[in-house]
Length: 146
Image (cartoon, rainbow, N blue to C red; front, side, top):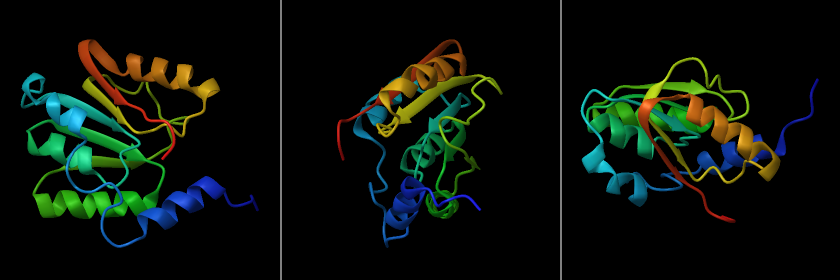
């Protein structure tokens, strides 16, 4: 039996708290991109947590796929999407194991996934670029620390 992953446990415990860890409003930078987003576009939300960004994109009429490695976060995201009256294709995955070549999207949004170590970032960013359709939009926000 494999040893428990401390990061997995930390995030699941954090997301298990009442309410939303990062709130329900979309990330400010992502929201500032609203004029560039058109109904019917496809979007991928990377490490989406409790769904604040995917629900917002879906509420704007985008066809959204989102993933996170925390099943606790995704359960909250699914409930949030249902309460908001939108549909999002939620999947459980890590950024390292996501199939970046599965399909291409008009928009790829990666907000606050600074947990990806420096050695892995180049591979993840390359994957995100491959997941974009030609002429697609890439929105990422990273921060140092928590």
